[in-house]
Image (cartoon, rainbow, N blue to C red; front, top):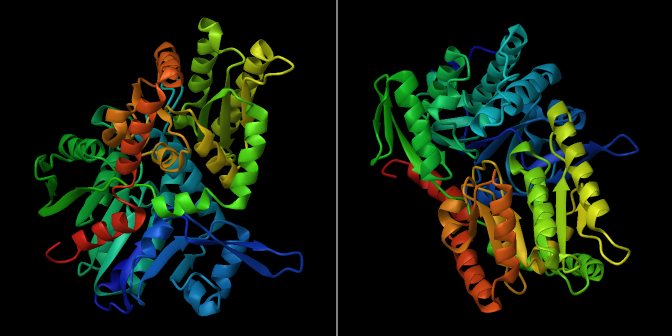
Length: 492
């Protein structure tokens, strides 16, 4: 790593707008002949950045695979656009971070520590245990954040706006401000934020480093006011910062950071067009053939601990056990695509999901009725097909920054869909009025909500779906991104 502060006196870049995120807009593979192959990604950030009409915008991201690292090494200063790669007309700088450093930062801290603390996931009798190995991982996380800060400092023009994304890069705003105080820096948290009582599980110096890292930004953005206020509470409790909850500001060490709330919405135009392409129609026909004229309960998730798939299955089992009238009249369609398979907890959780699904099929299935259809793989067209045919959508996370599935289903539903929604999902702030709200830990109440959704009158379901879709698309990805960018600029 170079001397980050050396960038202070010599801002040398030309980028007026920069985005930093762990995952970038493209990824690489290796063909049979050894050449690199490129795949463009999707999601809110990719859609959002496309809204920038600025030829000098730069996206800084990490190389996530050996092929990515090779592409980054072969490009001048990691700039994929300057190496001739087709990156969608965007300038992309991909960082070739040492694989061991990256693995420790990404798996050890970002996904096994910060993700767990913000989603309240630890089994506290046994975890966490912050030993010497954790400190090694924290050093790697610091080095990883420093690499991003160095790249941003080098690419940024004087006074540029920098939008840093998520818990992977919690330390970047403060590191970058130390090097380039001329920049306008924003940080956005796509996760919930832990309440003080849970954040204090972290070692004191680590909790303070995360908070002061984000406070290096001029503006810290969150998906809901609830998460913004949780961050403010932590700053007040841990740092003694001055907090104004109505104005949403935190003042610490002579600087004030504004807090912003931007509830990322679904991209309605894209979803509706994509949901009616031939590949989706084919999958829809296959699903309908499997389901017959039965009702459907649909869920689409990653096999992520916070998504609460197991309790969702338990609620469906309780529905079938206690309301036998639904036997042979409903099918639960569950698409759970693999997540973080390099972490033992996630592999074990995926095994538990498969095992419970098999138990439900064994208990209730007949030669003519499969009560639960589970696929553990990623098939976006199939997910859209399931959205279209869902009578009830089950979205019951333990805790979620937003949850876009809850917003996507009403947008593409063919006939209207009842939404059973956890009150712990960020989306509940916008959708709760027209959803069937549940405590994600309450299996009996969730089963009751499934029954209410399955028996909801068609007219009511249609009316609710229209209102849900309107709320879900209120802030589409491009506007979500531009609102943050405009708020960072002088007078914003």
